[in-house]
Image 1 (cartoon, helix red, strand yellow):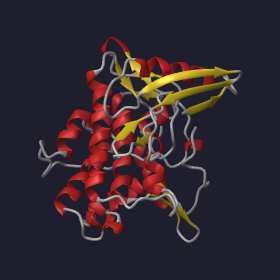
Image 2 (image 1 turned 90 degrees about the vertical axis):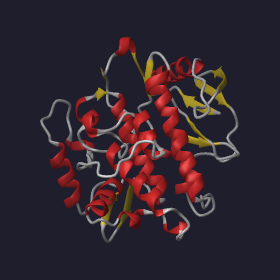
Image 3 (image 1 turned 180 degrees about the vertical axis):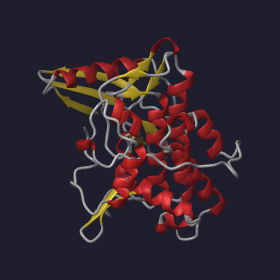
Length: 297
């Protein structure tokens, strides 16, 4: 059950948006809306019970909550999320952009089947529109750079977020890590540096030991990097990314360009002429920035 406090009209809009979106969605990898309740200023959305909470808690939470997910489970979660997004982007009419894909919005049932949840920020692409312009919302670290800068929302915005999520699942690391000695570390940046050094397997979660197929691991990470490329048109559609993950599309020899990275939204204004390259370079040279980079906008 999701509780929403109506501190502003934004909460009301998100409540109505989620009900409207979920009413007509039926897919194994999307949450099912059971009902809703209104009590004063409180709004409640009722989903089916998810025995294993969220992916953020299971994979990235503290030691008490973490489950040492085996490779097979991680792969199944990745494919499930990809199928859910492909359904939203390409099968359901009108098409839907989720706008807030992240580990805490992926719920897991008793069999660890992933369910994409929290459609409060989702937007509908009507009349086969390729994009819509909207206020920037989501979670820093998962935000596609072109969307963060311009507010231009496309399905490739979700693709970028999925790529970040993929890298988290394979590595067992959060999108942004912080320590006092080295400052902040960006997972997208780390994956890119390992790719350029031809050392991609160093990104794989060490808790897996050697219990994973190296060829699959390399392919998954490359798909993740393809999804987070700074140029949106170079990113694959979700259905294509899914086929890459299942090896229906061979990505051997596919060129991967530099990822985009939003390091600090405080310095980004709508319409500002800022290149993604400069954002990436800024992140690469950072020693420290505010510790709230992964907070919701």
